[in-house]
Image: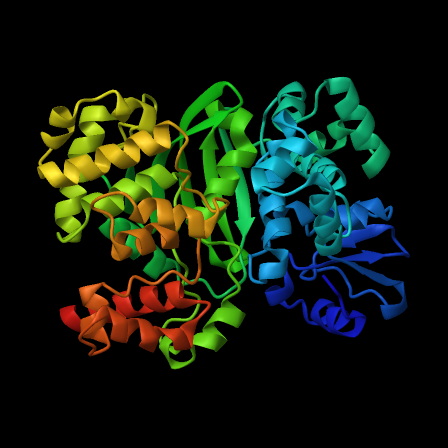
Length: 482
């Protein structure tokens, strides 16, 4: 990323939240690096050094600010095709991939050589993938020390450090003080059985619209929305261990952040959990860029997000079971599926009783058992085909899966057409240009009679067609219920 010093300094002086997370400023007179939105007095221009990542700032000898807390900055969105692979590598590292694997495995996961990965990553972030990963571990540990009551040993392990001794040594070496200093600064009100974090976003955020979308599709045993708060159950696999728990998310508009509460049972999977939540709520979104491109469509409701998912397999089944029936009808069938095949979960918030079925668990069921929830024979066959493909690893549904190959694999399954594939791409693959042109609601909303005509009409919104679809769905609903 090329950073223009004058532009960056203007953003720092204005505390412009549009740039939060896109660069960091190191101040030579203090040796501290900050987010552009830091509330401290604006440093002199001559003392400012700008970096594309927190890792680059730390590589150059700067320590993180204890006021603005760089670890809370929102992440990058994947906009430029040239940087997509580097951003994909960063997402994997943020989720703790290098805590359990090495560089050759990371390169293999992305389908490129290790040499090429190092080169493109350094161009994008100014550091090597290993240096980036080391910084992310330290920043995660800093966050856990400040915001949770986890014992220091558990903090070190959760952040990916091999031993408490190495953790203490590296932390003091890079930050100039012992980890215990942050634990002393943390408030005494932190609960020992839960963990609370903030995930920043770039305003505006159409929070009510986002929750309305999720609420209309909420599957009762695993998720619920009430009083503008989102709750759901969650299962994560880290290495050979499976962690089960739940999450609670609410908006804190005054801080431009989401407040996330997790149970201590997920302490070993914090990076993975926070990564899932960032993608579920599309927190890497740049509304200033997207809303400007969509023009009048976005003026009615700026800050629209495309809801993602915590589980690509879940989104695939939602899309398949929801074909050609109402949202309420799909929700009813999915509730039966979860109650019949989902794993019960104890000690979850009121009303949440199960985890969504894993592909492995559903693959062990017979077609007759799955059809018994109320599916047609053809729909059951499609569900089972996708289940087998995901369970065997032949199909991956996540934002890092290869787009074209994954769409082709989905369309090759009998019963999956373009609408279903595009919906899965929108929410499961995180593809911002996905657009279900075969959607009859969208066709009626724009007064067009065919998917082909709508597809041509939607080209004006590329590469943000998924956001245009969300705006159109909401506007159609508002007009039909007025």
